[in-house]
Image 1 (cartoon, rainbow, N blue to C red):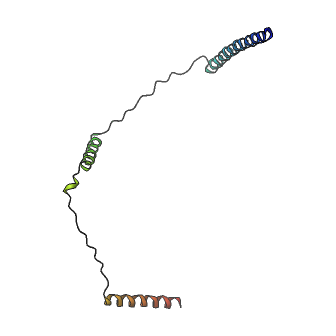
Image 2: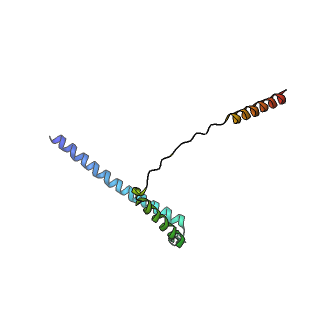
Image 3: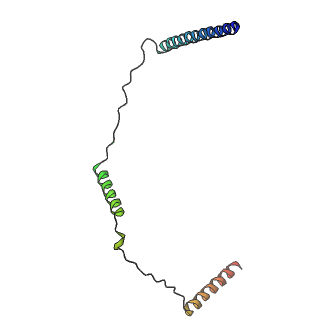
Amino acid sequence: MSSSTAAAEDSAAAATGANNTSTTTTAVLSEEIQSEIESLVGVQGLKHVPPPAEKVVLPSAGDIQQEKTELALHESIANFDSSALRHAQTEEKVVLPSADDIQQEKKRLSSAAAATDAADA
Protein backbone atom coordinates (compact mmCIF):
# COMPACT_ATOMS: atom_id res chain seq x y z
CA MET A 1 0.00 0.00 0.00
CA SER A 2 2.80 2.40 0.75
CA SER A 3 4.23 2.10 -2.78
CA SER A 4 0.86 3.04 -4.36
CA THR A 5 0.49 5.95 -1.94
CA ALA A 6 4.01 7.16 -2.78
CA ALA A 7 3.28 6.90 -6.50
CA ALA A 8 0.08 8.92 -6.06
CA GLU A 9 1.97 11.60 -4.13
CA ASP A 10 4.66 11.74 -6.83
CA SER A 11 2.07 12.13 -9.60
CA ALA A 12 0.27 14.85 -7.61
CA ALA A 13 3.55 16.72 -7.10
CA ALA A 14 4.37 16.39 -10.80
CA ALA A 15 0.95 17.74 -11.75
CA THR A 16 1.35 20.69 -9.38
CA GLY A 17 4.78 21.40 -10.83
CA ALA A 18 3.36 21.21 -14.37
CA ASN A 19 0.63 23.68 -13.45
CA ASN A 20 3.16 26.09 -11.99
CA THR A 21 5.32 25.74 -15.11
CA SER A 22 2.41 26.37 -17.49
CA THR A 23 1.30 29.41 -15.50
CA THR A 24 4.83 30.79 -15.55
CA THR A 25 5.15 30.09 -19.27
CA THR A 26 1.84 31.86 -19.97
CA ALA A 27 2.92 34.90 -17.95
CA VAL A 28 6.26 35.05 -19.78
CA LEU A 29 4.55 34.72 -23.17
CA SER A 30 2.05 37.46 -22.39
CA GLU A 31 4.89 39.76 -21.28
CA GLU A 32 6.78 38.98 -24.50
CA ILE A 33 3.73 39.69 -26.60
CA GLN A 34 3.09 42.93 -24.74
CA SER A 35 6.69 44.07 -25.27
CA GLU A 36 6.50 43.20 -28.99
CA ILE A 37 3.31 45.21 -29.37
CA GLU A 38 4.85 48.17 -27.62
CA SER A 39 7.95 47.98 -29.83
CA LEU A 40 5.82 47.80 -33.00
CA VAL A 41 3.62 50.70 -31.93
CA GLY A 42 6.65 52.78 -31.11
CA VAL A 43 6.80 55.94 -29.10
CA GLN A 44 3.69 57.58 -30.59
CA GLY A 45 1.27 54.86 -29.58
CA LEU A 46 -1.89 53.85 -31.34
CA LYS A 47 -4.10 56.37 -33.04
CA HIS A 48 -7.42 56.81 -31.33
CA VAL A 49 -10.26 56.40 -33.76
CA PRO A 50 -13.68 57.74 -32.84
CA PRO A 51 -16.35 55.09 -32.52
CA PRO A 52 -18.41 54.59 -35.68
CA ALA A 53 -21.53 56.71 -35.89
CA GLU A 54 -24.71 54.69 -36.07
CA LYS A 55 -26.83 55.65 -39.05
CA VAL A 56 -30.55 55.19 -38.67
CA VAL A 57 -32.53 55.63 -41.86
CA LEU A 58 -36.13 56.48 -41.12
CA PRO A 59 -38.86 55.81 -43.68
CA SER A 60 -40.26 58.77 -45.56
CA ALA A 61 -43.89 59.91 -45.34
CA GLY A 62 -44.56 58.32 -48.73
CA ASP A 63 -43.20 54.98 -47.53
CA ILE A 64 -45.40 55.08 -44.43
CA GLN A 65 -48.49 55.96 -46.50
CA GLN A 66 -47.76 53.15 -48.97
CA GLU A 67 -47.38 50.66 -46.13
CA LYS A 68 -50.67 51.79 -44.57
CA THR A 69 -52.42 51.37 -47.95
CA GLU A 70 -51.02 47.87 -48.37
CA LEU A 71 -51.99 46.96 -44.80
CA ALA A 72 -55.56 48.17 -45.41
CA LEU A 73 -55.71 46.11 -48.62
CA HIS A 74 -54.53 42.97 -46.80
CA GLU A 75 -57.10 43.53 -44.05
CA SER A 76 -59.92 43.99 -46.57
CA ILE A 77 -58.94 40.76 -48.31
CA ALA A 78 -58.80 38.90 -44.99
CA ASN A 79 -62.22 40.23 -43.93
CA PHE A 80 -63.96 39.70 -47.30
CA ASP A 81 -67.45 38.24 -47.04
CA SER A 82 -67.63 35.47 -49.61
CA SER A 83 -71.32 34.81 -48.87
CA ALA A 84 -72.19 37.91 -50.91
CA LEU A 85 -70.93 36.20 -54.07
CA ARG A 86 -73.33 34.36 -56.33
CA HIS A 87 -72.64 31.42 -58.58
CA ALA A 88 -72.28 32.07 -62.31
CA GLN A 89 -72.92 29.52 -65.02
CA THR A 90 -70.35 29.51 -67.77
CA GLU A 91 -71.18 28.13 -71.17
CA GLU A 92 -68.37 27.00 -73.42
CA LYS A 93 -68.91 27.48 -77.12
CA VAL A 94 -66.82 25.77 -79.75
CA VAL A 95 -66.92 27.57 -83.07
CA LEU A 96 -66.14 25.28 -85.99
CA PRO A 97 -65.04 26.71 -89.35
CA SER A 98 -67.52 26.66 -92.20
CA ALA A 99 -67.01 24.66 -95.39
CA ASP A 100 -65.95 27.83 -97.27
CA ASP A 101 -63.32 28.61 -94.62
CA ILE A 102 -61.90 25.09 -94.97
CA GLN A 103 -61.72 25.40 -98.80
CA GLN A 104 -59.94 28.76 -98.57
CA GLU A 105 -57.40 27.37 -96.11
CA LYS A 106 -56.70 24.38 -98.36
CA LYS A 107 -56.13 26.68 -101.35
CA ARG A 108 -53.82 28.92 -99.34
CA LEU A 109 -51.77 25.93 -98.09
CA SER A 110 -51.51 24.38 -101.57
CA SER A 111 -50.40 27.68 -103.14
CA ALA A 112 -47.81 28.17 -100.38
CA ALA A 113 -46.50 24.63 -100.93
CA ALA A 114 -46.29 25.23 -104.71
CA ALA A 115 -44.34 28.46 -104.14
CA THR A 116 -41.91 26.64 -101.84
CA ASP A 117 -41.39 23.84 -104.42
CA ALA A 118 -40.77 26.41 -107.17
CA ALA A 119 -38.21 28.21 -105.01
CA ASP A 120 -36.38 24.94 -104.28
CA ALA A 121 -36.18 24.01 -107.96
